[in-house]
Amino acid sequence: MPFDHLKTIYRDYDIRGKYPEEIDESEVKKIAQALAKHFNIKKVAVGYDVRPSAESLFDAMASGFNVSGVDVVNIGLCTTPMSYHMCGSSDVDMTVMITASHMPSDYNGLKITIEDSKPVTSDVLQIIREIVGTHTFSEEVQHGNVVNHSMQADWIEKFKKKHDLSDSNISIVIDPANLIGILEIDTFKAFEPDIKVHTIFDDFDHSSPNHEANPIKHETLVHLGREVVDKKAHLGVAFDGDADRLGFVDETGTPISSDVIGALLARYVLAENEGGMVVCDIRSSKATIEEIERLGGRTVREKVGHTHIRGRMREEDAVLGIELSGHFFFKETYFSEGGPLAAFIIMELINKEKKTLSQLVDEVKNYFHSGEINSTVVRDIPVIYDDLEEYFEYMEVNKQDGLTLTSEDWWCNIRPSANDPVMRLNLEANTKELMEKKRDEVLAIIRAV
Image 1: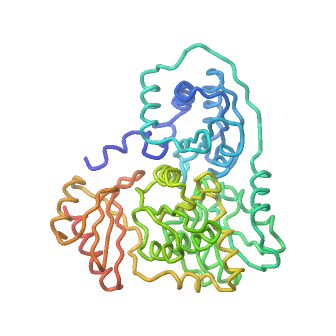
Image 2: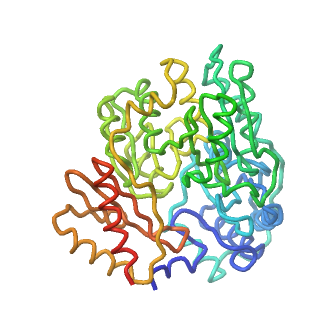
Image 3: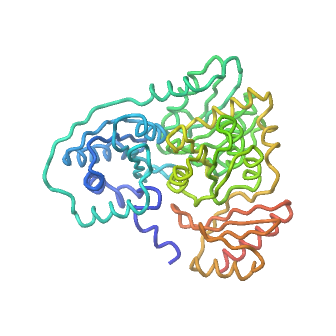
């Protein structure tokens, strides 16, 4: 079958599954014991989002760590970037964020970092899976403690120290989709009255009733765009389910591709880090690469997935990482997602350059992109790849992440999703007409019966 790898909760980037059918308290307690055994840790911080199962899974995880002799710092309700910050800025050996990101609230999972907020990679997750499956952790009961610590005050202070929006009069609309990103509203409001903060869907509701918390889908930004126009705001920002991804709309309510936002972030970051390296995912626009190089930066492409981008950033000592799904990674945030940092940088650019966001975007965007298109497939993935290579035999082939085909005037990347049973297509061309023509040709092959 095309997507056999989805049968396990131990995925490429994290642990994730439906609650309680695939992930439950028993499994989470054993995972905590396995993590304690494999990493020999002494102190771990654990946070969670607003899902109904979150606190119960926290109790199970804390129990698993405690019986392994590990002290637990309960950071409670927090965003995933807050948990990463805790790992990099405190004396804990590990952080675990209990979340399933943008997935529905009947799912839950774990995002794990160690030491200086390094991500736990897929090979290590498979070792943890084996330890859990073979029950090879110690049965000797030890005793760790649980202490409570709120992250939010420290998090807000971090942004207050770094950013200056004095007398900017910038107006922003925030859409947390009724989920944990609501915590970030206070981060922005800490800058009032220098900025004006408007919000929509800002009451906690784990069902996210107004729209899916997935800003890569432009249809989830419709309400945000309308509110930006209505409030005459300079920009709008939407958070995903655990607030590690951001989606942007400009002052006209138009969604902006994350790789274009990444190019604007590079303008700011490279001004402080001349000649710095930027890691882009394999799907990033040629315009993004060209803009970074125009700014004097260097670029390297990497596989999709936050663990891949973050790992490559550490290898390259990169100052910025860009992923098309709305992850923005910064060296200053321990090579991890900066939460609202990207929004603060964009606000500073608007204020400094005295341009609208749409004007800034127009200085970067030069090509025509299909957006990410999902297809449910019935044929085996290698067969689809073979058919595409044969049909487009004149194109350069790269198999770093799925299949990337490149020619002088267009390129595309086709890859299976790590979280959903679909194939994802991203295609870009020099003209709109060519993009639409090649998009339809590629989709016909992907979706062939």
